[in-house]
Image 1 (cartoon, rainbow, N blue to C red):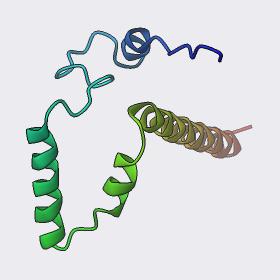
Image 2 (cartoon, rainbow, N blue to C red):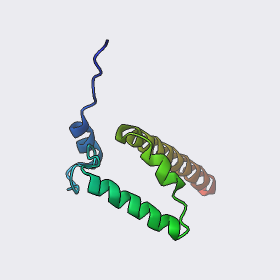
Image 3 (cartoon, helix red, strand yellow):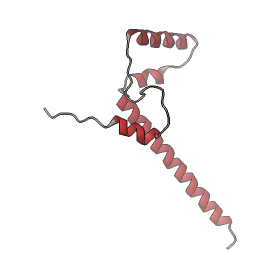
Image 4 (cartoon, rainbow, N blue to C red):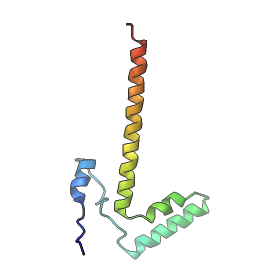
Length: 100
C-alpha cells in the first residue's frame, strides 16, 4: 500500500494568513472532546428551533477539514476570476470613453 503524503499545513496556513494572529490552530483543529460535540448539538438544536436553515452547515460538517479548505480555495479562485472579469470590463468601458 502506498503511503499517503499529507500537505504541509503550517506552510499553507502561513501562505494564506501570513503574519496575522489566528485563534488556536484553525487549520488542524478538530473536535477535542465530548463537551465540544454536545455544544455543537445544542447549537444546532437552537438554530433549528429558531427556524434557521442549517443544511449548509450540516453539509459542511460531513466533510473533512481538508475538503472544506479545498472548497474554500475553489470559492476564492472563483471570486478572483469574477473580480478580474469586472476589472477587464471596466478597463474596456473606460478605454471606449477616453478621447481618441
